Image (cartoon, rainbow, N blue to C red; front, side, top):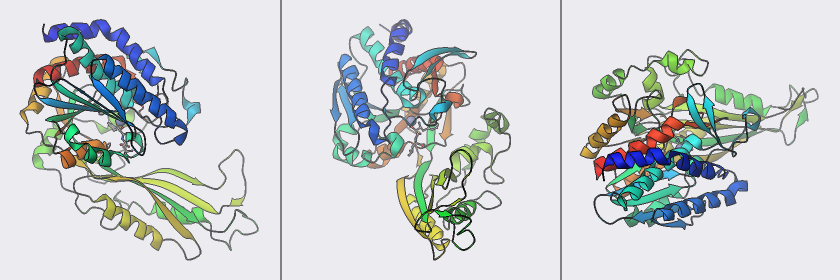
Length: 456
Ligand code: BES
Ligand code: ZN
């Protein structure tokens, strides 16, 4: 029995694999919203049952938040761990979806069939590529390729609050030779890739309170301080004219791109205008003088993710609100210290709030950036395996998103993470009408079979 038999089995089983994924996509496992707690639990149960059907000894493990799923199989060869997350982002704005986000279907589009649902691309579809590769391997060989640990999280999209304690308490079980993670994308939606850098993230919510209640803006306007005016001045001051973030000390620990990496990235031929063209834009908005790939992979950012305050309903209302708030996130790189930046940001904001108003803060996750060692020969082996599956040769790339677990594997367990994913730029992850291309799913499963073959 050879790799070709496993690949043929994957091809033949694709319709059934798709049905299994659609089943999982029907569970609305939105981790950030307590209303969906039992659904997160149900998704964990689904995964336990699915892993058991492969002969994996799997269990749901309680945490103070949503459960983890951990499974073990095999006892010979290298010990590989696979990580994916079963939680998904909220679906709002629901009115922008073409169908119920949790009523998945395979749709035919001009660029081929896609699986449409919340979580299809991030991360259930990606997570199942690995599980399905194992299923085919098991069917062909009667066993899995090596010692395998499956580790599925249900809080990735809400800052992974239970992850570090869980990894510390179960360190012996989760330590492995390599941690495979399927939660990233292809380069330019086409080139298979191993992601070697992730940005970190710091989330902050700030609430400015002015008058003790909402006021008539004719009666009080002019004499009473408006908290939206305070808030927008703060938010408007977070970037300078050249696009740099103004928080004091923000750039401490931000490295310049090493020359070797710069030339490697230049060779990728990234076209910022085309990348922005896909979303109706044309002009890069990051720091002046930085390349497009630097802006999304290796430079830190500050983004305002939401603003709440005053009257936002239909029509018009002359209100002077009591409160205004904003959700702000920072993407971090290099050795930027999330907690130091949090303190500096809060201090800067406090200094901008007039005596008559008050400000409160709520933190939403704080994790450093990660840059991963690829000196292990397993990386070149995996890269070659990916190149065999896709028309383009595989590349080492960066990623602007954050996957907290990757850094924790490296720092807490001493296990090197290897990030391989098959998402495309237009998957609309975190947005309405999220999808995962059938090509990503099918070739993703085949890719993992090839990688497993190369690593074992
Ligand atoms: N899968 C994404 C990370 C990602 C984003 C990979 C874009 C490739 C392209 C991941 O699930 C995610 O969205 N993470 C959150 C983490 C945050 C809440 C700490 C993110 O990056 O916003
Ligand atoms: Zn994800």
